[in-house]
Image 1 (tube, rainbow, N blue to C red):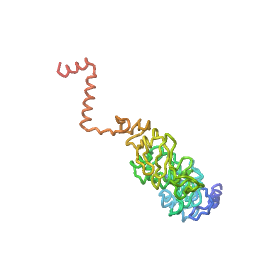
Image 2 (cartoon, rainbow, N blue to C red):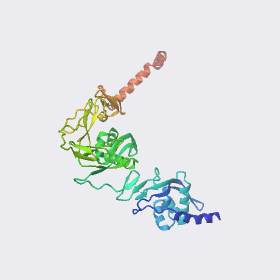
Image 3 (cartoon, one colour):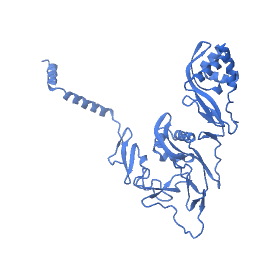
Image 4 (cartoon, rainbow, N blue to C red):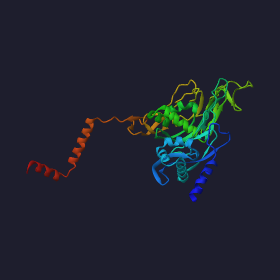
Length: 389
């Protein structure tokens, strides 16, 4: 009797669920489903059909045969079970596996999203084209910038591990925009190392995912004659190209109200005017203390305007693992495995690989050390025994 009631309740359970997310999702609507990664025996009608390994959402286990056929075709265990029993029995069994899983999650999806259940993230999703994933939402991408129009970019402050191709390259801590990712691969030590070990495209994709998945990602709109200056507190910050100045969210020319021409790019005493890389080149600047600035040590690694480069980015020293800038000079504290600190204290030198002959010499020397470290009385006794005394 109890089984009969359960069988009757399952169709009602399915029909009460919200509809699956499709490309034409209604604006403002958010869908909620139960998803879980299942890795256990699939038992149907008392028969164990083997280990069923799949990430499933309740909404993709339908109560009719047509959509279920795709899932069965993709999983041999479910397919075999359906052939030996029935579609409805397998549907009920899969539903129970999802509901009884200890790792089941209630997943909420934004409008214009499609669930993509994965082992590591049962609530993962993609966005229906042409929407893109930004800050937990599916939004339309910015239109291509045109001459005279305002520039649009997606920016975020990212502070997390940079994992590329399954390898954790360390903490990537940077305020970055999608339009200047190529520059970041050259200016950020973690990203540069990852690109050298894998590929630029893989690192670019990994950082793009970090930006899009960041809860603090912002769609930034820049006025004409501006340069983005992404910061931790304001990802959409910008400066204006000289001689323009920032007024009311725009970059405007100073009026002729008695103001004389002057150098707008000035810094306080003790600070040096250095360039900031952007899609338009180093036409914006920041004021740095080059005596201690890691990425512009001893001068500007990125010069402003037409000024010559005069400093060094200590983080770009080949083989370096821990470095600082002291009194305008790079000081290497530690190098990566296979490298040692150079005699100058400002570089890393790669260790030369040992030849087979060198290894044999070291082995022979070690053997001699062992021989002469023996007790002298035992060594003399062994010599007499070998001579036949």
